[in-house]
Image (cartoon, rainbow, N blue to C red; front, top):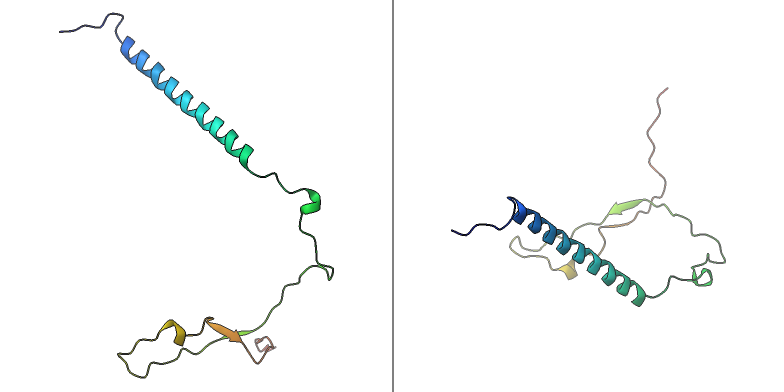
Length: 106
C-alpha cells in the first residue's frame, strides 16, 4: 500500500491549487482573445458618419384600418393549396378608414 508523503489532505490542497491555476489561465486566455478580436473590428462611426434626419423631417407613424384577406378555397377537398395560390399578406387596406366607435347611450 502506497502512503502519501505529507500531512493528510495535502493532495486535496494541491489539486485545488492546480484547478485554480487552470481556471485563472483560461480566464487570461479568454481576455487576450477578446482583446485581439476587438482590435480587428472596425472603429465605431464618427459623428459625421451617423445617420441624419431626412430634409422633410422625422418620419411619422401612419395608422390605417386593415381587413383580412379571403383565403382561396380548393376546388376539391383532397386538393392542397400551394404558396403561389395564397396571397403574401394576411390582410389588406380596408375601403372604410373611419374608426369604429361604440354607440354611447346617455
